[in-house]
Image (cartoon, rainbow, N blue to C red; front, side, top):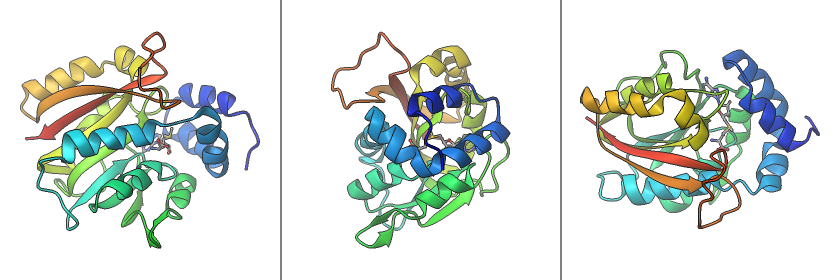
Length: 227
Ligand SMILES: C[S@@+](CC[C@H](N)C(=O)[O-])C[C@H]1O[C@@H](n2cnc3c(N)ncnc32)[C@H](O)[C@@H]1O
């Protein structure tokens, strides 16, 4: 366990350079991630992306309790908890860090584990998951500086079935510098995805108005459907 300052840990997270350094940081951070960073900074991002996923992606889709969606980079499970409160859909979580997954495994709703299954994966590689396995996908805080970039979108899309809907939160500063715009243009042009739109959400504080003067304080949630 670490007692390090959450701001210092976030700065370190943004400066990571690949899966090995991510694994090592989150091994140190997992036990205090929620009590330190989430509580201290007023991290509302999971709630806000899940709201977009439910209202803009799952609404009108043929998805129910017999379907499974995947929480991509689930961490300690905050998006899973938020989704379980809003939808009966089954949820799997995938993440690089065994320590973060261990935290996610403790999350319960009405005495039942929030996640059906938790799987250790590296989003920068081919995922050990069948093509079209999921009815949809949601992701929070994983498409950000020092974590994963647009190259990981293709695998996430591959594991969602045709007609499945995704809501992928992408840090707005990372979106601008890492080439997400061209990557989404290419995915649309090649017919892999359709119906792309973007909804902005705050990452901290629950403010209803988004302060666009600091692109590290808000995110673009890319909502789209797999073809
Ligand atoms: C800032 S945390 C976000 C966790 C959670 N979704 C949330 O919003 O609280 C980022 C997560 O991305 C995971 N991650 C980083 N690189 C990854 C990779 N290459 N493959 C899978 N997960 C990765 C980390 O282990 C960590 O749990």
